[in-house]
Amino acid sequence: MPELRQNPATKEWVIVATERAKRPEDFAPLKIEEKIEAVNHCPFCEGNESLTPHEILAYRTYGTKADTPGWWIRIIPNKFPALVPQGNIRRTKEEEFFRYMDGIGEHEVIIESPKHDQTIAVMEQKQVEEIFLAYRERYITLNQDPRFELVLIFKNHGMAAGTSVRHPHSQVIAAPITPLHIRHRLNEAMRFFDDNGECVFCVMLQKELAIKERLVFETENFAVFVPFAASSPFEIWVLPKKHDSSFQSTTPERTKELGFVMKTILAKLYKSLRDPDYNYVIHSSPSHEKDVEFYHWHIQIIPRVTAVAGFELGSGIYINTVIPENAAKFLREA
Image (cartoon, rainbow, N blue to C red; front, side, top):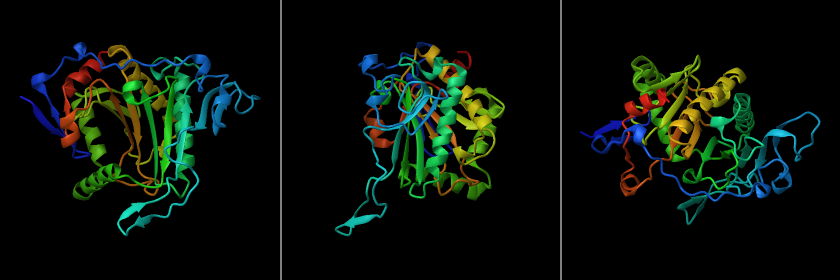
């Protein structure tokens, strides 16, 4: 019989469609034909630095100059930004009803490698560690800007995930607002803490580590599992075992360990699902709530192996055709 499952951290419901469930080993990911740009025209490739805005930060060979070859991580402003650094954060109303403000913020691209055809799943371990150290560095810097409430780091891999450039890259956006979707998550976590005196994510982590049925693997400081109410096939959460509400609290050593964890789980997806398109997001508390007891930073990975249809859009309830326990077992063995 199908099940309705609720995520205890977000209170969102999903349908686990057991009647139409697919076996993980038979799961065929939805792939969209990609338009592959020629390497000599790719703005993110080494040697094409003149095709991008001036770099904000780069990890490069000693003695090489900015905006020239010699880097292994390079961070630049997005050429087509969603938000821009100039403007006023004052909120205004039109007709005393419609609220608006300048689209102020930062939108950056983290170019993860000089190599065009790389992906985290097959990169050298040290390179992946450097990517996550760069995430941390930019997160801390942007989080200190008093104009910004939210700093969001995310990666779109593949056309189905929304990328337009194949070259491996991530993005970071700093915004002066906390969107309703994130406020909802914060409010639910706060409500659980008020009722129980515990962080809902910490309790969830304790349960998953004890049950182990949905646990994919763990390291000294991180656990990787398929959520009880996974909203889509092979959705994965990565949680630090130590309670921290903000990603910036992670030490450099633990950030390197996180790089190992992310490379490992993305390699499992790469091998078992034939390099599926995916998104991942680092969920962290807003800038003005850097150290709270009720929230727990984490990474959510969503392989784009199914399409969102009318029922999901209309109801907000997602249908998952892979039973979470089966997905976790499949990934453990990958």
